[in-house]
Image 1 (spheres, rainbow, N blue to C red):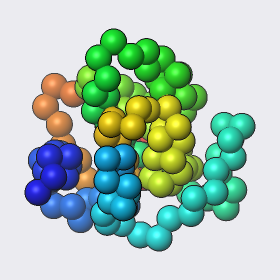
Image 2 (tube, rainbow, N blue to C red):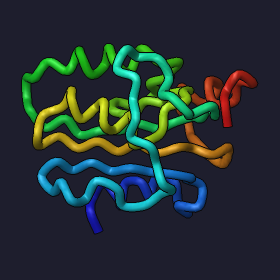
Image 3 (tube, rainbow, N blue to C red):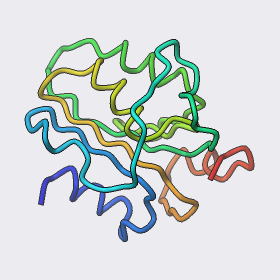
Length: 144
């Protein structure tokens, strides 16, 4: 099993807790979507929520940025456009109307060809240990 998929299984246990997840490994372009529901690829490049997506969701974004010394500030700046919490080194939680595929497609423009990106929609079923985003996730403002 692919290490990123194994990592997702460790994070989520039963993948039933994840409604839609998208995986990008640019070294294998045909492996873009491993599982999930049909997702739109329309994106408003101005940074506003995508057209036709009225439902807010908490999305988990994680990545392996493999190019040493590379400036990933544009990637981080793009993620900071959302209501977010970053509680682990390469893991961001976004409260957004964007789908997993839409987020992945935008991140694809900001990472190197050998980098890996994983995006999934979280449901309300999660657990943590000393995780700094736990209060953020428990906040009544979160969109499940």
